[in-house]
Length: 227
Image 1 (tube, rainbow, N blue to C red):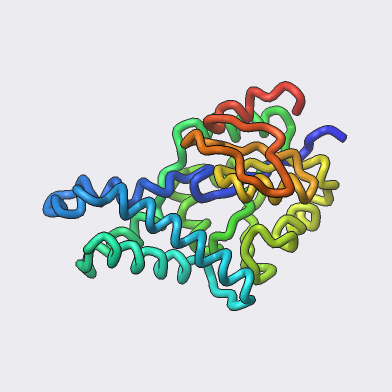
Image 2: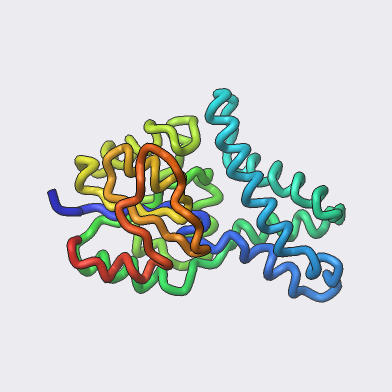
């Protein structure tokens, strides 16, 4: 079957998860934070993901905004940052993340080629609404699908089921792109044609599924001839 539907993970794939810490570090009066922001951003993202996996395993689900706050609190403590105003600023900025530069043109090109486009994300609906609006890409998406409708985080198969339920597609008709190697691997095992957006040049995860294609950024997705 040919690809009819292009689905994208949100955080780290469409939206720059490091932007919140990077922007805050450039603001006046945050010189101490500027010295540690890369470490904090990395720890924040790592703990955000780890907490989502642990909650999926234990069945102790909560929304992704809570997980995001928990991850930030851990990262701030680990990096010696205790300013409550900084915490609130980082959370505000996370609600307003920028899209990567290539995203609007890539989505526009796919839609011009007749593809359905959507987000499938761990993010809660309000978080995703904020990011989509801030990035100005709402008109380029057919839908924004959140795991909150099934109450479990990726890589649970119930999350990937949302695509077929929404678009009435077979998995083989779906291109799924994620910057998370584990997400691309799980989606590949599920049956999607997967694109791993490997922005950091990491090794491929050793999981049952392997990404169908590895690219350095999303501009390569709209260049794919087979879709």
